[in-house]
Length: 149
Image (tube, rainbow, N blue to C red; front, side, top):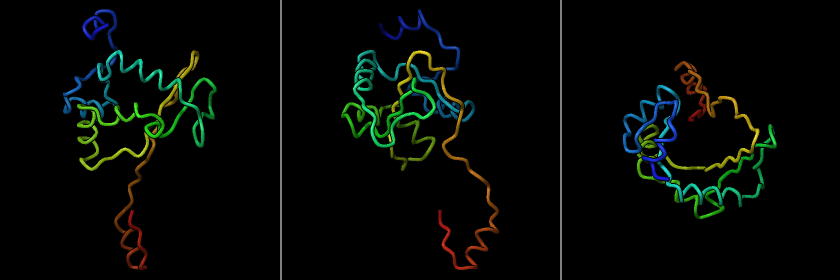
């Protein structure tokens, strides 16, 4: 099924962005917290990703403590060369660089496999920024502490 056929049978309820509309996707991320970009992967790429996901076996810190219906695999690009092809996609890497700077880099690539009956996960943030007054750093410097973050 090609993209035009898909759009005839399925429509998104959320705002979507074109793969190469970096400015529009940046705006979506800033306004909504995400950018929905249809068509990033083709049908054969999705099938290959699904097959690779089915082959993953948990080890180390993989897993899920909140539901047996949801599996979480960490650093998948180290497990199968296929995942590397998803790390630097045209259109997507430009979005990452526009949001985080040209020196951004991938430190992990996770894969999630949710089974039938799994109803999703709560909204969360991976990092919370807390404003700290400059005077805190001035005190640390006066005490000779190196508090470089």
